[in-house]
Amino acid sequence: MYLELFKLTELPFRLSPDPAFLFLSKHHARAKAYMESAIWFTDGFVVITGEIGSGKTTLIETFLRELGQDVVVAQVNQTQVSPTEFLQSVLVQFGFTPFKMKKAELLATLNSFLIEQYASGRKVLLIVDEAQNLSHRVLEEVRMLSGVETTKEKVLRIILAGQPELNEKLNAPELKQLVQRIRLRFHLTPLNREEMRSYIEHRLEVAGCQGRQIFAEEAFPIIWRYTGGTPRLINTLCDTSMMAAFSRDVNTVSAEDVDAAVAELDWHEFVARADRMPALAAGSAASSASADWAVATNPEIEKSPVLARLLVAHDGQTVAERQLGLGRFIIGRTTDNDLQIDNKYVSRHHCQIISTPEGSVIEDLNSTNGIHVKQKRVRKHNLNDGDVVLVGKHELMYIDERAPKPRVTPTDTADVPQLAPEEDQEDEK
Image 1 (cartoon, rainbow, N blue to C red):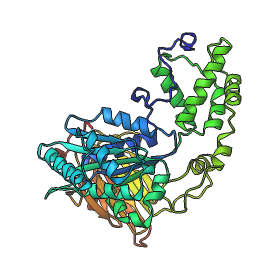
Image 2 (image 1 turned 30 degrees about the vertical axis):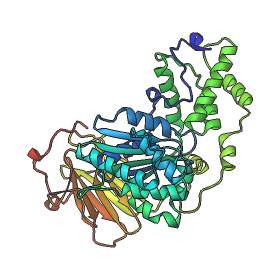
Image 3 (image 1 turned 120 degrees about the horizontal axis):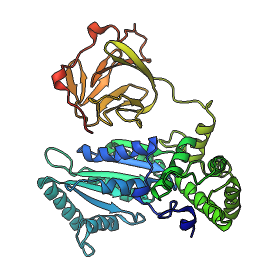
Image 4 (image 1 turned 90 degrees about the vertical axis):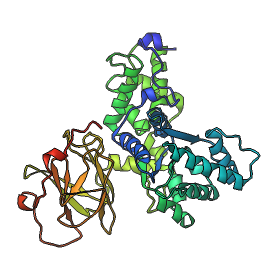
């Protein structure tokens, strides 16, 4: 192989989901944060979707490696099963031998196990990959499992991961009760141009390139044109391109090598291939790969209407303004958030605002210092026009564009609640 020629210690573009090579784009970081929230919340139920090769399985493997000793996990990957076979698969993951059990016995055993783990102070997590293959009958079993609870709280956290068809399936009227149990839904989109380049360089660095530029500048636009930012396609094309360079005994991958790889793979440009993919039904919670490509390459495409604005103030001065459309808006200290507040009193993923045509709700994401409305710490709050929310040392004023009311600004500090300094702690999250 080409390892010696390129002076690498391992293959950089293998298709196997190796957590050591995980590259956290903004969307991948958010998806991982949503998975982590399934552990934080007692009613954690998260759905992650993405096209084939978008990195879902690698995210799951990385997430699993980081779980604490107090989390018991069942991971189900075979999903073309009957309801009874599904329950058996879950129990096998928990260490049982349930193959002679009838369905009633399976459910009783599983319920007893969940309550026993809760009593022992452990959290139980069920992860189902390739969940788009689950039948409606199996998804109904998932709903029933999500309802197992003690007198205080639910005892099973659930993560469903799958291709965009999963969203179509969940939108079926007969699964309405299941959807109501889901706390978070997120769709992984392809990498953008800059992220694609960083992704390639990241994998090469992990493989031992030590800062050397192995791909020539002119190679990146071609890779983008034929992969559309899909990680698995990037891996395939980059690996084949390095083989082409190896066959010429050169240690830099040129545009000529990428063109040769494209010819060998018999690929068409990504946008042409994406156009042949079936589009999702109108109103679906996810977007298809072709739609993601269109948004990335055509900024004129109409975006979600502006439902509200968020004015960010510090020390009585407005420092930022953001628009809120339909969906989730994440606020935190790191760059993968929709609004970054780089302050030691703000958690990595501090809180989120969920906006619908009817209104917006702000919710704490298990932050250290919490969120405060009218000097009172709140877990969740229905936002009203003019509300001021304290996040660390910053004030967030919510301006509802649905409500034609006289506006106030956060510079009017007389009405801005202040958090006592002694309540704040430096956040290590």
